[in-house]
Length: 253
Length: 314
Image (tube, rainbow over all chains, first blue to last red; front, side, top):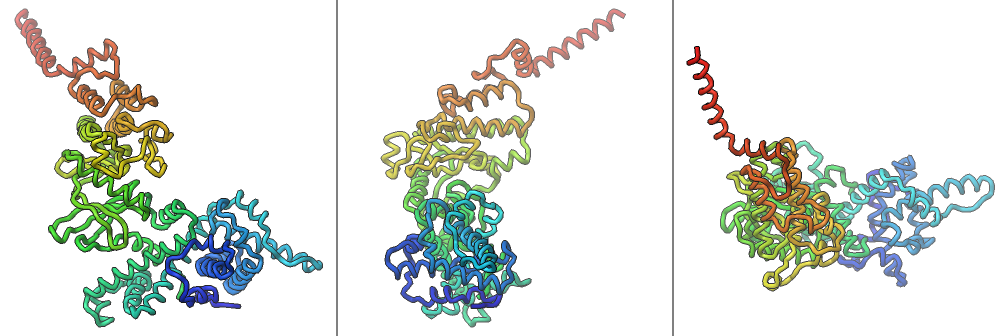
């Protein structure tokens, strides 16, 4: 499947996750879910992982492996397909690395082996695969700058997924204006030279200014809860959750 | 939906951290952040005044919220001009706990040191920090995270010790009052080492020994070192005071903040300090400095007598 540059988030994995109404808001850890014996729980967890990591992995492939956007989309799609097919998540050992580090290194290993296999195929060789032992080796020779960059992309993926979830939640709760105002004020107009005032937002949506304040406060509270909900789902322990929250919000505790 | 831009991501991160307005308090800009949370300027709509509202970071755990509440309880029992009074505690609509303190308009000691201080001012500030800590210690409360960032200097000369969130309560009566209790030694109840590197006593850093008054003395010694280094040359008696306060072994330190303060006050008054055995030259120099006015008068008198003698002989 090929997706355009600006539509990374329209990937089927993400849509499957968002359209899955039975997906609870407060979920058990997706890491645990990915290792669950119940195939349904496993599938949900994998979908959730894909929803958060699709964009970071796509960007990573463009940056680190110099793929163009279209090739990176194909490669990302292929990677997640392989990850499901070969039970990659089942081989994840949480005590060795964070999920994002593991996935990034799996991508490295997978692509490296794919290229090797491509060479072998020309000589009648095997198909590509992810070598988990190779990932273990790479873990010790980790490139810190790449890790930091991937971390930033992971954060972008996390916040974008939370924003999509907020949109979905608002739509189903009949709070479309809440989301529209929140997105306009906090996302769309952030890069614009002029940001609308509360009065302008009120006038544009035909509501009192006090409602703008209320809508923004409600949306902010829900958005924060959704970010933390997603974050908590990626962590195995309370301590890890606190560390990750500290990383995201830059707060010590 | 397109991926978020860097600016949008930054804004959303900041937005998610910032507390949502409480029914009573309107939250404004961030005033500072420490080991235990973030402090915001807030407006108390009920009383129509500005306050400092402190929110626990991203703890969201029972122990984190409990720690904040404990800090509030500890603070409410410490009534001293050098300890920031607490007005209110509560939970924000997003579930995070907060407490409301008097808003101190001024700057942190860290910033003041960076801006430069005279030796006398530095030491006078220091003795007032010691007074607040000595009072808390006398009530059985060990601060355990004293740093120049946790001391505020008010616009009218107030010196206030902040951030009692990891304080340890020692006296039985106090423990009963502060029902949540406190962790032993240098650790919190959940086992994390508390304190700030560079100011944390070795026994706290090791998480082994019991943190007591002398752990606070160690941190005060580090603050004193910063103050002296930021206000000129380190003279030997003061260097000895710093060395004794920051001795690796708790037994080699001052027994409490009051004793440390007494030595600094003695130095300011031109008296010998207990931490330093001075030689003859130092004693003469100190006495000369202490009695410089009298010595100056004697010198002028002798000079006049000498000049008169010379003049009359002609």
